[in-house]
Image (cartoon, rainbow, N blue to C red; front, side):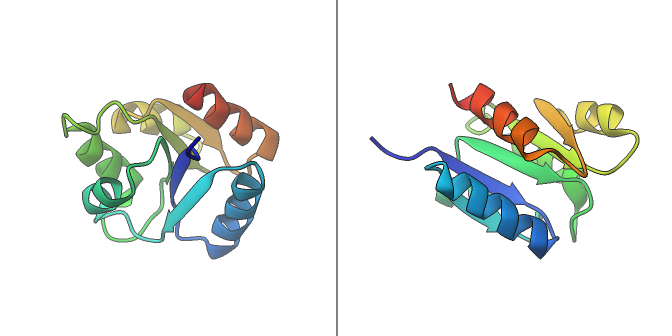
Length: 120
């Protein structure tokens, strides 16, 4: 059985390292990116089952990157979980057309739960 794939966009390397370790230990294949302007290329190449998207990310930001992805017919079905420390997370996630959201600092159990929900 092939591993479920998670693509994580975040410019915080500490967060990327922690999340990568957690999800890899749980049997997922993880790919990370510190920029989001190339989201379509990255998704085309990696074919993730779920995406974690940070709001504050270089070049185009989480909202624009998520909208870009959701505007593609072949990728709009991929669940995007928006992850941000912003107080307007609900509004931002909605604007981005994200499927769900988790506030920062996040509880790892919450994050794992959300990911599992979209992969089941």
